[in-house]
Amino acid sequence: DSGVTQTPKHLITATGQRVTLRCSPRSGDLSVYWYQQSLDQGLQFLIQYYNGEERAKGNILERFSAQQFPDLHSELNLSSLELGDSALYFCASSALAGGNNEQFFGPGTRLTVL
Amino acid sequence: KNEVEQSPQNLTAQEGEFITINCSYSVGISALHWLQQHPGGGIVSLFMLSSGKKKHGRLIATINIQEKHSSLHITASHPRDSAVYICAVRQPGSARQLTFGSGTQLTVLP
Image (cartoon, rainbow over all chains, first blue to last red; front, side, top):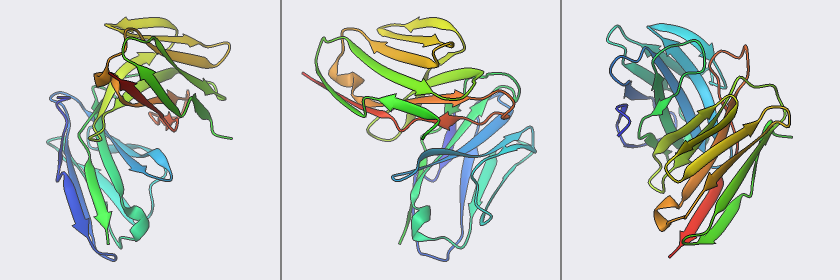
């Protein structure tokens, strides 16, 4: 158990809908990362937050957004969903934002868009 | 060409065998990570390396910065080692982004 929690574990929804994925980092970790793992693209970095502020952005679509709240949990919002958004979404946390900090991964949320 | 290449893509071994998974990268890096993804999907961080060698139990990871190459070795392999092993690199100045290899599917047969 990494100490990172994600909810829900599974989500099935329809095209055009909007969903919110939630992540709680390990106790004491200030940095949260979101990753997408799809069959055709593999693992890709989406976005990072550190202590409530956006720190780095990767291959995140404009239809997707995220935020980190004062209690350090983070939410990833996916809107106008398309079939291609079906994937595993992982959250990871690390203690700090700078340097080469080890990341601890949550169990993932499996999103299926029908 | 992908910035991070892993080989082999698939590997089947008999229990007890010594296993090597390779990762080559084409960019300058500040750190390299080895991750293990279980059949259920969960990801565990195994190692983070910036130089030399690290060992944890039956797992050994090495990195050669000059040759831009890293290897993950598993000694005395066991069926519970069956998983996807993923190499990821962090480039200097790229914030905290990781670039991932496509993974190596390892199956260890009893």
